[in-house]
Length: 168
Image 1 (tube, rainbow, N blue to C red):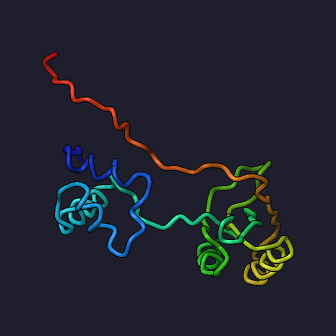
Image 2: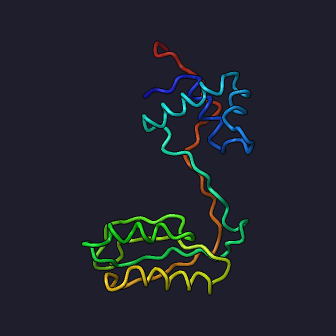
Image 3: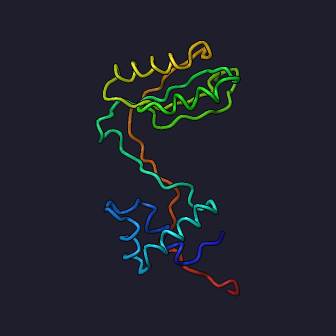
């Protein structure tokens, strides 16, 4: 899919986030001189074509009081990881959970789950709940606690891009 100038304007206007209003697509449409339906149609088309991967909230866990965050890693039997992983991912304090290949012999872990809590004790209690879910299928685990906030952003389009004709 090639972005036309309107698609590009939509991406540029939303790459820092949607407006925090009751109808964000209507506010965006007003800013761009489009209808709300046209903005939503174009964004859906870009999502269908993979230009936009997803539209989601990205909370700042620290501002929400979740100051202890740990990436837990688990060595789970490959025969059951696809069944147990979604159970871990459904826990209310897990923001993302995914399976990755092991990197043996140094890295035996194949299931990753980000745990969030207001204290280290709370996260450690969460770890015990995950241990209970995984049971005997888990032969090892660890947790790596965050020590600082790193800025996370997706791909950003340059806003000073000028069209150059192919004949130049």
